[in-house]
Length: 184
Image (cartoon, rainbow, N blue to C red):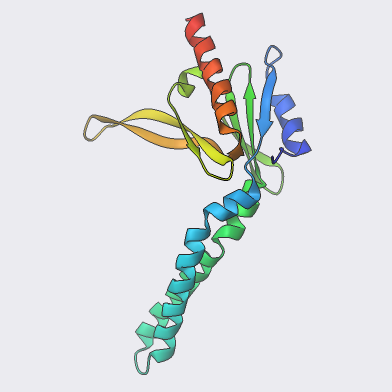
């Protein structure tokens, strides 16, 4: 399990209220997050190879060469995806308190944190994805409307990604949500 760093815990202690208690904390496993982005790496290999061939095989047109070089740069970006996912995972932490779920991210190197807080009302519709290796994701689904069409749809967004023991964490989130329902 990838536990959040001391800095996250220290910042969280300033964030939580006096009557709020920390129940669970973790963070995405960096290796698992890198593995999850390997599709982009494989596509990047093919993309970069074809782009290099296009640039190399070009005899006359400079515009084709320029476009091929741009495609090569995009390919290098795809090759970087697992490394980027690895380091991004090291900058995130997940918490469940007695009142809410928190996704905390380190935004910059000067210790600027982004905090997304989800009360029990937003935790009623969860999606759990389990992988064979014991890792998985818990996604918080929000029902949102499109103002242009007046239609409602689920929008997956934030959640706990790349964590172990997803069934146990889902149980904690469901208990928090049911606690809110009982208080209403």
